Structures are given as C-alpha cells and as structure tokens.
Amino acid sequence: MRIYIDADAFPNAIKDVLIRASARLNVPLCFVANKPVRVEGPATLSVILVPEGLDAADNRIAELVQPGDLVITADIPLADRVVTKGAFALDPRGKLYTQENIKNSLALRGLFKELRDGGMMSSGPAALDRTDRRTFANRLDRFLTRQLNIEGKKT
Image 1 (cartoon, one colour):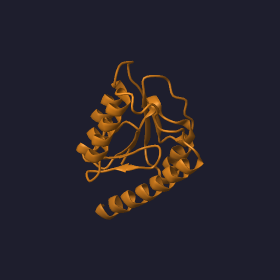
Image 2 (cartoon, rainbow, N blue to C red):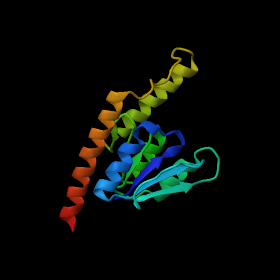
Image 3 (cartoon, rainbow, N blue to C red):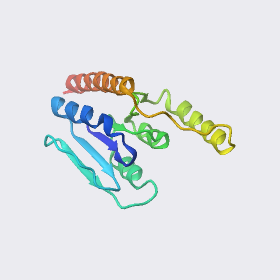
Image 4 (tube, rainbow, N blue to C red):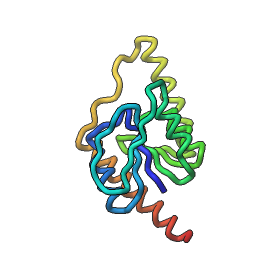
C-alpha cells in the first residue's frame, strides 16, 4: 500500500499527521504537486513534481494509484477516479470515499457548483480547525490499521 497526497491544494495542518503515520507504519508516502513541496522525514517519503497545468497532479496520481492505495485529496473528481481504480480517497476533513459513497459525493459537488454559479451560494468550506485535524487523524489511523491488518492476513 502507498499513500499519495494531492499536494497542490493540500492543507499543511495535516502534513505532520501523515508523515508520523508513514514513519510509524512504514507506509510509503508520496506528495504529488506542480510546485516544490518541502518535506522532511523518513525514507518512506517522496515528492513527484509534475508540470504546471490543469489537473496535472491529479492525472499523475490517477496513473500511479493501484487497488488498495490511499489518496489524500479534497478533489472529489479525483477521488472518483481513484475509487474507480479500486483504491480509496480520504479528504483532509476525514471523509473516506469508497465505492459505496463516491457517486453521491460527486452529485452533491455538482449541485453545490450550480448553486455557486447561480449566485445562491457564495462561500466554500471553512478553514480546517482542530476538530477537523483530529477527525482526519483518527480516520487515517483506523483506515491504515484495518488495511494493514487485511494485507498482513493475505501474506
């Protein structure tokens, strides 16, 4: 299992949570972005720098992701692509996207876009707070523990 991070619009508030989890569980962690990303930590960390362009990081992640991998992203269309390939997506607020819920999330995103475009809704989500970070950390820990237990039983 690998963890890919859609680092173009990634909140730094949860970077340390991911780095600690990667080091503790020895799970490879890869930041994918179209601008340099500063990361320090264990050998399990890497950065892939993609050319600038619309969805370049998303496209690279979608190419690399394998079934069972985890992608950290707030981008619901990318989450849909990832889940379609048999992987999982976790947003920075701790929502896990799976085969069971991704299509509903994609439809809701479309509705909110229409409301914003029509002037009926003007703001996006609030900034991450302490509760969001804790929710993310707890969901990440539960997911990794469950997946690594499943992988361990296969071998």
